[in-house]
Length: 107
Length: 133
Image (cartoon, rainbow over all chains, first blue to last red; front, side):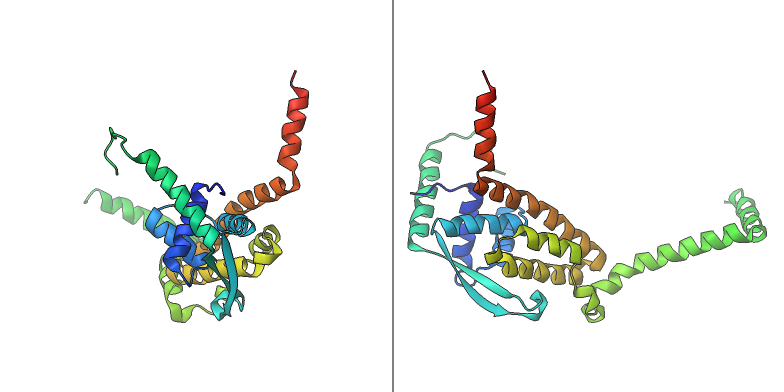
């Protein structure tokens, strides 16, 4: 099973939330809006490329629009191995988190 | 207030005598006033013309250069879409700054990714190991 970093997890969760219309801008906005973390377009695409090479996500071409300078969108979806890998990665975090007595209240 | 009035009269008289200084200060004040109202005008969607929607060419070129061919059109399209939205929200000047900031921030992760792919990092680690006693 593939190991996933924090950005990989955030992107994959954003793709799941935006399904079936997850593309670069919507993924970035979803992460900024919900996780309060800002990443550049380059960082997002570098991570998407990494996930695509591992076979965890797949891409399909969308429609070109005028505001994008006539360029097509790339819509991303999670593959079955991608979903399994994400679930396992999140489960590992949950298992480690369970039973911890926090001394600081969550902000 | 009374004590300030003679001083301001003196200043007006002084500026009246020194035409160049008076003209320069008036021009600077006018420029500031125009600058103050400029972002509000640019924020209006109707007044953004086609030229304003074009992202900075050099930044776009650098971003395209740093992106893999497979994702190039999509990534530049995403940046153009964000730029158009930023122009509407904040005005062109700030949108250009944001576009450049995103481009500069994009170079790092992509360059690192390319270097890793080329085995450059492994080469550096191997060389460092060889140099250590």
